[in-house]
Image 1 (cartoon, rainbow, N blue to C red):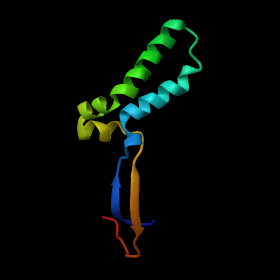
Image 2: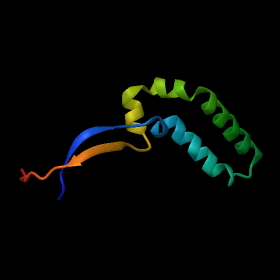
Image 3: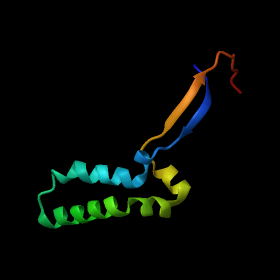
Image 4: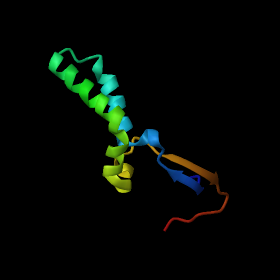
Length: 85
C-alpha cells in the first residue's frame, strides 16, 4: 500500500452542487420529450446560470463539501514504513 502526505485538497467551483445540477440538466435535456418537462428544465437551468452562487452560499461550506461532485488532492508519496493499528 502506498501512503501519501497531503499537501492540499478540497473542492473547486466546478465541483459545487449548482454546477453538477446544471451538468445533469444538460445531459438529460436531450432525452426529455414532454414540453412541460422541457420548460421546467429550461427554467431551472436558467435560474442556476443566473443564481448558482446564491445556491452554493446557501448550502454553506459543509453542504458544498457533502454534495460536491468531486475533489482534488495534491500529495507527495512517502517512503516511510507504516504499520497497521
